[in-house]
Length: 146
Image (cartoon, rainbow, N blue to C red; front, top):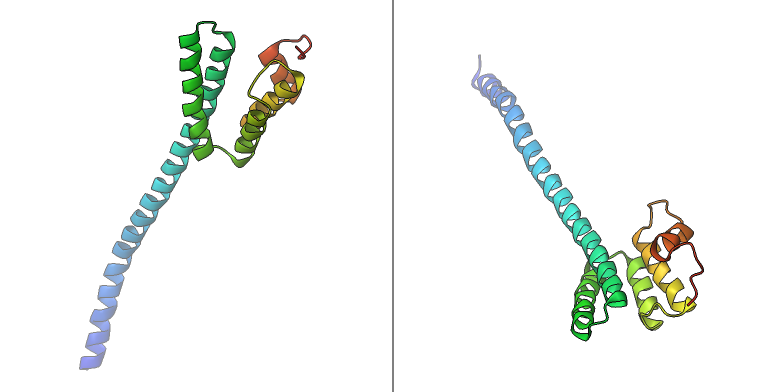
């Protein structure tokens, strides 16, 4: 066997030995990267849903509380949640939130109520719930005009 043939034989042995090791390393790195990406997306989705729920809870509190200090605290909670919605929320939700804000963030007239229902519907987008079912769940089966 010549020196060149011997070198080629040893080179092939090393390549054959190294390929599975390289495959395992590359696979591990890819799995780690994809896992981190998925975890990050799940954290953002969780933050989004928590902000939506906290905002709706704060709005509901401020609508029923009569004590000035309690209402102030509920409005503060709403502001915190609204800030997180702007950061984590879907574009359509932020747009609907802005619309409801333009309408005065009140539930005492039909125009504002419809803007609020649009906001909640945007938060529930993809759930299959109709606007009418959401309205009934939030305000009851009666007329939604004040």
